[in-house]
Image (cartoon, rainbow, N blue to C red; front, side, top):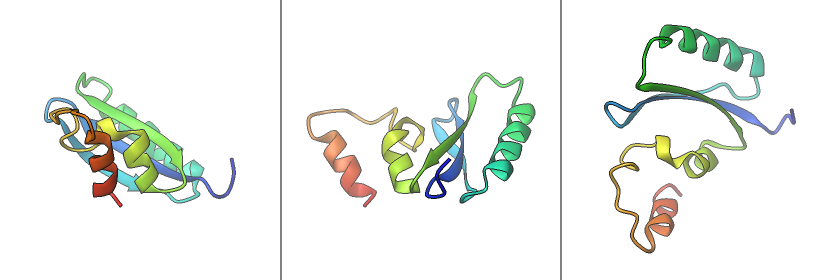
Length: 91
């Protein structure tokens, strides 16, 4: 992987419609993978928890590319212009 890629670990609770964890591992892919495995084991029996390891240039990009994991998205109305407002709110 390119050294410009940072690793972010997202933990999302669908039952609460809430992101319950965001961890930034910078460029340390081994630490990110190890933590990912640990959380997968911890939540192995949960049907409502998603653990997602994302490689990206920034958390701002992750908020756009994985917007469904950020609070309120699932309950938000997606009227015309909603994406533009969402993008403006994270800048």
